[in-house]
Length: 382
Image (cartoon, rainbow, N blue to C red):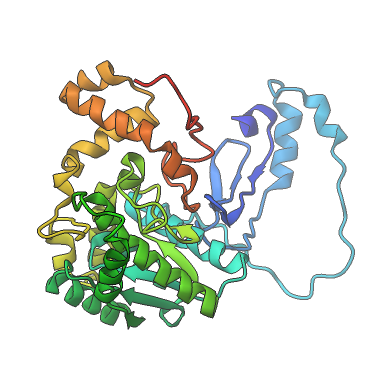
């Protein structure tokens, strides 16, 4: 519109790259005096864009078009002549780069944000705890795309509750990606923790405390590897889990960068399916995509033991977090009111966990952190 108003070319020059949570997508473009985009740079990639413009036609247009806004400003523009000679002919590359599909764009944003956080903060390699689940699989895939397979180490830390399928799925993923793996079983460490605490815990029931010892042991192992070798720990919690606190503080939350902290669980599945389809191969094993999600901290555990199905949970979370809807408004969308109240209560109560989480790439209209600032200590609740 401004190009048409003033009869001029407009150049939109955007950043490319990641800075903490933010990712700048590039797609710089040149707009002609009619308001048409005549050239556009690539997205999520640096590019030097050359575009030829018709200055003579533009001059005639300005002389004859009396409806241009504030024509007096045109004469105030100084023409800067550059010194030196052109030693070779520069070919304009004023093609319109294509926009990506929804999932391709999100995937590229996650890769670029992760890559720049790693490189710009002086890290060369990353380490990831591999559980055989879909979240750690996606994070591992993004890391490989960001810094290359040789700079990614996956760590298998099975316990007595880890299924054989989870171990083989982790091994299959690692083989498909070509990354190095380490295996550090935690059963003996877990048993020793329980033994050390047994006298203090005498007379109490085994429960969530004992379950959470396992991710905290795993977090210690990953941080030990980070300290010893200078690797950056990438955490694997998604936005759905982060929203309702379905993660362990100082356990699976321990790390330096939370790659998918703004990616809802349902979108995690779609991104994995997109990648497999785009590469026409099962890089992420189909069993990882198909099996019910589980933290595997107790026998036969499933995420749905504690949470609604993600197909139900994610729309409720979006309505509350991103769309600013209240309990009654969300219930009017067709969701059980008591369930909505429970989900919102979980979101509000777990603000303290999110304050201690690692930063991660923002890909939704409202991510936790700078986008959504709520007090931890708050008497009022929905």
